[in-house]
Length: 211
Image (tube, rainbow, N blue to C red; front, side, top):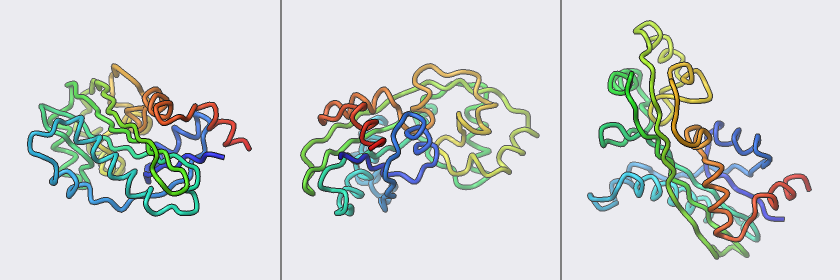
């Protein structure tokens, strides 16, 4: 039985996979994202940055799952919002989230999600496929009171771009152009293609999940 290992602590990504018929094993990577990004060449493109982060997370987890490494696929993801040519990750602090919203309210930005899939057999990585998805998000203009209340919930502090589509932040997204699951954190259409690249059909994972 081939197990899918999700190299992420994101409950949103886990929820997307479970709703789509897969109950992954969750292992959280210990990757220092800032260090990985800083080590990249200065001219690295935004899509390549999020793919590099996703690859680092997947590789970190692949190295520490001996109990699953006989037959599994490890999926790593990283999401960042591209605003005015600058990548924005998790704000962590209320004032940073407020500044981010000042930049993006009433405007559009691209949510980039890097995906990396590693195929393991007998503890060895035998195949890899990685790519970035991009979805354009059109933001509303929350009132000052709405923004204060939203930031006070804490939700935007721990998510890329200081917003969610599937949570409270969805009230402040007018529309998107692209894959909604990718905005949530893991794009199902892209993941299906990457799994096919490493020799795994998504329906095989459905069957294994029910076994």
